[in-house]
Image (cartoon, rainbow, N blue to C red; front, side, top):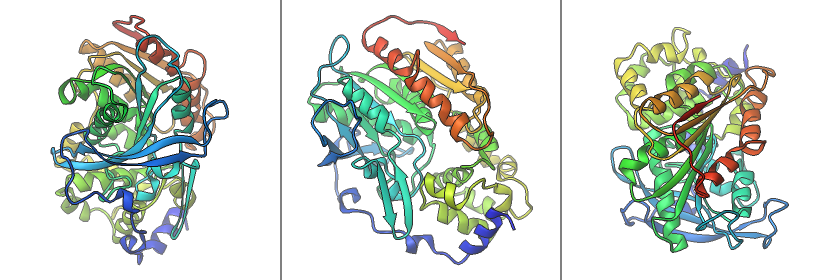
Length: 422
């Protein structure tokens, strides 16, 4: 029996809601909180015992855990959490000290997966039930902070706080990023003219891209200097097709759970197509982190969830309302008014290169200022994510001609215009 089939059999009787631990008090929103987007609801000190070796500042490094107000896609106010790291070091650039809002890569869907939970020690280990979540943004946040920038890492909507984390929902991720910038301005005591950049890779790249294109209408007062959107999942239809059966194929479940939370009418159509065991597995996935799915559900295939053994995407393509939803969630139908760097590995086995390039081309056709860089790292063990997906992240984010340099040039007023593709 396959790993997935074995897993499906063992989770049938599990009630994931009963197994989920209580949400820590800080992450429980008060009954009444300020509804203005970007309002700071509460903060508490956070000690960063995991800091970069060359941080050259106080150790443990100080930070704040923050709860702030954002918006669901229908405009309903929602409490979101994140990590704010101020900087007392001189800004290693020209002009005013900037703020960088980071959209983390895929963390998971269980509340314990919130990045702010793992920030203090770089790794959170939950014992009941066993779950592990690593701080993937240790190096990006630490590097920006060492450069003298303020940093805010959002947890996204529903990750840590009550409710389902709406994984790769472009509207809600954009809101979380943009309202994090507003909250950072409040915390720093600066105004909306503070130079700002968005930074993200993979899920974070999609969040950064969505925030960049939504900023002119949702938060026009922000002074957005530039964005790095690395390997952005801009077209969910394309991403779902490629990631199914991948080492982290379980993230398809994160996406389906998020879609069902915001588009409940989909439940009726999917009930006819997903087996009871498949539904049970979706419930279990909603409580897990990305590390958990690698250990418990490696190379998960969605054809094991459906009644006829076809991939879940084939069913979504046959449901009219699903096609409308996937189109609504596509990034690239709006136009950023500030420069954007998009990067993608041509052999990325997790987030398809073609749809990332298509995003850049779509923006370019609308008159945006876009730089697109191709990472030509050769394929290594396709389908295993680590080399072909995370390899380009390390190279594009931290290697020669990297995303840090691109955004520092934007902060320093180095002009860029038009579209550049390589």
